[in-house]
Amino acid sequence: MERWQRRRILIWGKTRPEVSKKYREIVCTGGVFEDTRRLVRIYPVPLRYMDDSRIFKKYQWIEAEVMKAPSDPRPESYKIRYSNIRVLGTIPSEKGNWDARARWVMNPENIFSSVETLKLKQRKDKTSLGLVKPKEILDIQAVPYSDEEQERFWAKYQEAIQQMELPLDFGKDHTVKPLRPPDYRFRITFRCDDHECSTHRMSVLDWEVDALYFNLRQRGDSAEVAVEKVIDKLHKICGPDKDLYFFLGNIASHPQVFSIVGFWWPKKKKQLELGI
Image 1 (cartoon, rainbow, N blue to C red):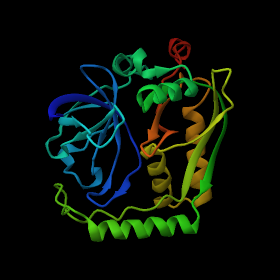
Image 2: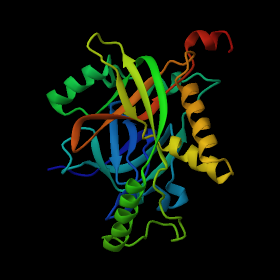
Image 3: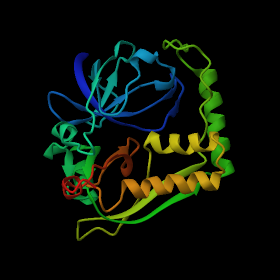
């Protein structure tokens, strides 16, 4: 019988909000347990509706009650009592040096030599999160959501509001703007270091990527200019001067389908030594 345990977690990423009938919207959040240094997925986190005192950032420690999600077979998936999250200190990067963060995140057990290796592990024991170092970035593109996809989103969102099982009582008032459907999905095509790799094209689900696009639009940029700036940012993250890894996570209903749910992108050691 699973039970609630209070644990410390270092946050490394958040995916874009998803519609939920129970919570209106939730954010799947990626972290690392302090005691095991293993990757973890925590939910539900109705982040936009939570009290400001419980809002956490990337590479910030939190303490909360968590329990292995009983209905999710993925070993990294944990439920969290978001109402008692305690937000603690952050681990900053020192002039591009991520060593203090790497102590927790870059546990060899979290790292896979290729997407193919991660998928083999998934078949073996349902592993659903892992870090993979791409060998070569081949393309970064933005694909617009169709009108039909946006209509389906709004229908699902309205249904969630009407059928929501819990009231919106997360500590914040009810003036939060409605969740918007994405205008574009950003994708990265890459090759990993495996002779069996035939290239991978994965969607980027990191919330910060969508947030950058929407913020640029709100500041007055056209959709085309905003897309160009987001792609430029992704090229910078994936640049040759970065020691790049992708945080990859799968979909519960399609366990062999992985997406990019976060980025690990410190400068390469040589760049740091040269002060670049």
